[in-house]
Amino acid sequence: MNKKYDYLIVGAGLFGATFAYEMTKIGKKCLVIDRRNHIGGNIYCENINDINVHKYGAHIFHTSNKKIWEYVNQFADFNNYINSPIANYHGELYNMPFNMNTFSKLWGVVTPQEAKEKIESQKKVLNSKEPENLEEQAISLVGEDIYRKLVKEYTEKQWGRDCKELPSFIIKRLPVRFTFDNNYFNDRYQGIPIGGYNVIIEKMLEKSDVILNVDYLKEREKYDELAEKVLFTGMIDEFYGYKLGQLEYRTLKFENEILEDVDNYQGVAVMNFTSHDEKYTRIIEHKHFEFNNCKGTVITKEYPSTWKVGDEAYYPVNDEKNSKLFSEYKKLADKEDNIIFGGRLGQYKYFDMDKIIDESLKLVDEIKNK
Image (cartoon, rainbow, N blue to C red; front, side, top):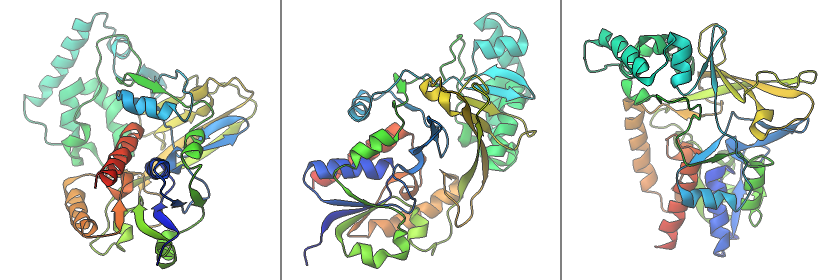
């Protein structure tokens, strides 16, 4: 029986949308479905009082891959936003990433050499031992003062565990600069699409059929009948009914506040709150992403928490135990003939936006070259 579509794409996020765009370019028919009531996945922007609100947390596009930068620029013009977050510890404000502005305020040092000597002196507490947990790893990179004020409690809020209980590899490196440069990313290209990320996804999906508010796993038989192959970008363990066990994720809760009488709440798009005094990890003031001078502002407080079935899964917990379980699910996935798993949840791996596009394009190339 000839099926109506070549591909059923489950998930209208960046991975699925990129795949759909490339497939329709070569004449394939795609149906894109999503359980949410909008396209765009976690990069979806909701317009509130003329402000593009990043509904699922701050998304700043950055890459050193010229090919990917040129690729996204075909869908939208990007502004020149530079990510320069501020860390707030009990009302003390510090520049991030850790740089000479941070060190000068923290210790009163003036030269890079003084800052290096200060960090080196504080690392001696470890007695040159190999770090065995995240706390020791962080101290080995930035010393005790920065760890205690700007890393420890923030990380514990993120992961819901004491830093001594977290594996050292979570913080393989911390950005430390001995210059007065507040640009958080080292990447060559950076910015926010003018008009928000929806502009990109809408153009990517122009030639695909899209159905929203669909729970594929509840109506799988019906939708599988429509297409030759399925690209599944949801949680791989959920796809298999958690039959090998549940993978662990972290989830996020977002609390929006519309402040009609405040034009500038915090003076920066992203402010991290690094103590346990605040239960949220950061406040996003969305208008600063697009240099929006409209009246009023919208802020979002971000609360990490332990994931449970029914929650949105944001971050895979890629420790040894979960990586081992994922490898068992991947063995099942590799045996599938007509189902492809992709994206952050399908591959159980955190990807930045440029990497997710690159992964999707690699999948397209694999299919084309078969």
